Length: 356
Length: 247
Image 1: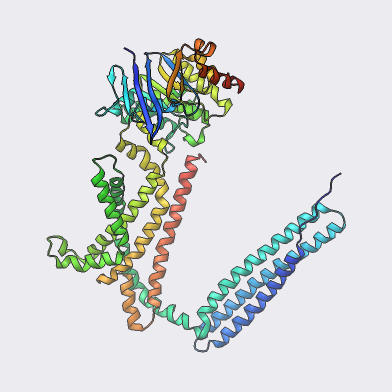
Image 2 (image 1 turned 60 degrees about the vertical axis):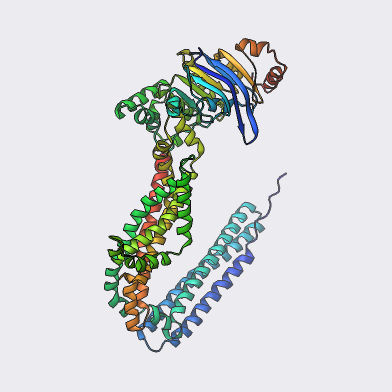
């Protein structure tokens, strides 16, 4: 004697999804229209808001379609249950619930996206005019992009220095034995200190302080080199900790295996521990480098003409922040490919070792 | 003079004494098996012989040279005395043949091509020639352990320490690893092994040593230890093993 448990309930969800989709359509139309009515000064913006509304309504219609589909499957489930086809009824109910949840997900995304765009358009497009004026962005873009090369150069040169110096610090911090104690102490002190002091203060002290010291060589460098120095000193401390965490997460049995073959401490680090640790530290290392790239914009405090500084000139002469938005966009543009590149590298490394 | 001589070995971990004065001589070409319950000190003793652990008291000498205490070239000692671990410990970022050849290339100064060729020849002997270019993750436990043994052999050691090398393996993979140890014993390799495989210990050993709580309680030829153990504790241990169906 078998008794089949009934299909899961789907009706309530499907009805709710349908009501939600209808409410979404109404809200998009009402909010969109009232915002559009507020736009009086710019015909382009008005047209744009109509397009946004149309897109919102079209997506709302898709949402309604999935909601109705949920409802249909729910009804079918009921019919099948009445006919005694419990298994089929379960399948239909599951489908109905699935469609309901898809509706919720879509509706959520549409609400957020639509609200953000309306925020830009609201109040006669004030936000758009403050941050996103196309004409000002276009006219400042070339100069800013040119100045952005300074940011890239700072990030790249500091990045290379940081990679090397950070590793030296990490190894200094892990040097074994009594003889290594003073070295370990120095490394720990340096890392603690440089992680504690804000990058902008290091930059300020070096940028304005070193020229006053009359030190041979050092005081004569230009502002860009001071910036590189400050960023390298600061970020090496972070990167040292990233390396150290990677080295520490290699299982001690790898040390035992290498030492038992007769490899010395340093040989073990070089041939077995570091190559494995490098793979582990790639993602946190990338985060640190993105932070470093962004912090190149701090150099405006010592007067280096980077993208941000250039944008500020435009901003103060036009009383508008659109040129600064350009800088933000440039940072996004150079960061995203790096993230994808690292994802791809990790993927490749993993599939090679698993022998895909 | 025995090839490996241990006298009065003592070792503590943060107040807990794991080895309480062990004396043991191992002759060249001898196979000595350490048996005893978990925590009896078998693995620690092996790790003390090639100085992966430092000893608190006593001396270790290998081939007539004292190798414990300060001022010893441990890296040279370890090239003489190879070790195989319970958890294989292959290098995951290197292929099988690189795992085997890295020691000879970097430490013995062998030519890269020649070392890789020899690695493949050694792999042939353990029926793993077709896995030379694979990464350790792609191999079964038994295959990984066979590679680990070959990696140790590739350094041309004069003695091998085998630390419970079948304990992490699925039962059906144990035989393929033990067969290699059997071959090595036949070829005259000096070996000290810690194991729970009593049947195998009985068959392959020249001397069986029973450790309990850090002390060497009894040692003798396998027929005597397994057949007529003198010590009450040894009898109790073997009885448990027999009840578990492992002997």
